[in-house]
Amino acid sequence: LPAYEALQPGLNMEELPRSTTVTVEEERTPPRDHLLWSLCNTLYGNFLCLGFLALVFSVKSRDRKVLGDYSAALTYSSTAKWLNIAALVLNIIAAIIAIAVFA
Image: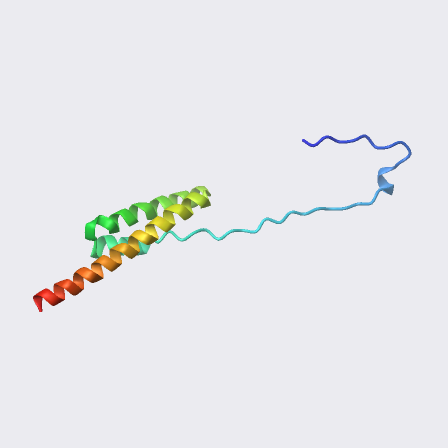
């Protein structure tokens, strides 16, 4: 607690100027967890298990978001997003190669 000074003699509390300080904390938007994207990558294109890894990090991100730890949730969310991007790009490349070879 802050130290308080004694009121000087001859001063009355009603005579002192009044001020109020209100601190408003801006509500942060929770980070996205990319769970649906990770689930689709896991079910439809789990190349090198990147979709499954993205799903794991998405669930971790959602758990951290529920607990209120937004910095850890943001880290896990970012990892899930980049794993999803890598899985998607590799799946597209694999599909192009498969069409070129078998067509």
